[in-house]
Structure formats: structure tokens, C-alpha cells
Amino acid sequence: MVLIVLLQIWARYGFDHPFTWTEELARYLMVWGGLLGATCAFKRRLDPTVVTVAEDASQPRRVLSSGLRLATVLIFLAPVLYYAFFGPDMNFERGFLWRSSNRTSPGLGVNMALVGFVVPLCCCVIILHSLADLTSRDRTS
Image (cartoon, rainbow, N blue to C red; front, side):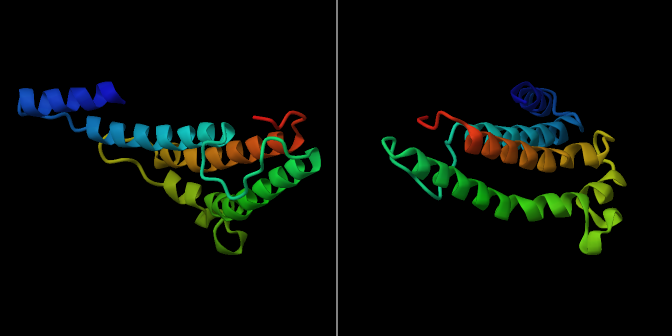
């Protein structure tokens, strides 16, 4: 992404003729990188926390903490996943990905569903991280 932005700057200010595709590609890479980075931050517990438990807490308290964390994640991400695939009344054609699949980006000509697919992908990865945390035996980290 940095190389794409540097290429854009070089072409714009060095030659006074910027490429039409670099800004759009950098934007889409930033969306993908930011959301995939959010999944990594969630896994390492670097995200804002709702419930904090001391490291010396008992095992049942840690399980309860992981369960509450999973519940808050599901409350937030379930509607996001639902509307990514389905629209109102379980209509697949009104879902975010289906509507995005009928459009292409103006500069690159890429199907916008490829850009938007990162949203449900990251939601699923975060849910998997939550389930793994709930079933993990070692909750000291």
C-alpha cells in the first residue's frame, strides 16, 4: 500500500500526470488492511475491552469473562453478518454483497463485492477468535 501511495505522489508531483488507479487501489488496500488488522488486534486482546478480569482470577471467572466477551461480539457482529448476506425479509438480493456484486469500481474495474467481502470475512474471523478464546484452556494471556 505504501508503494502504491508513493507511486501516486511521484506521478502527481514529479510528472504532473497522476495515475488514475493508484488512489483507488490504495483506498481498497487500506480497507482490507484495516479490517484484517482489527482481527489481529482482537485476537491479541488489543481492542477496547468491555470486561476486564485480573490475571489471578479463578478459572470460572475467566470463562465467564470470555463468555461475556463472546456475547458482546455476537450482539454487534450478528446484524453486520446478516445484512452482509441478506437484506430485509431474508432477501438475498438485497444483501450488501449481492448489491455490491452488480457494481464495478470506476478506476480499476474490480467487482465491488471483492472489496466488500472483507466485512463478513473479518466478522467471521473475530467470531472464531472469540470461540477459540472461550474454549481455550490457558486464559492467562
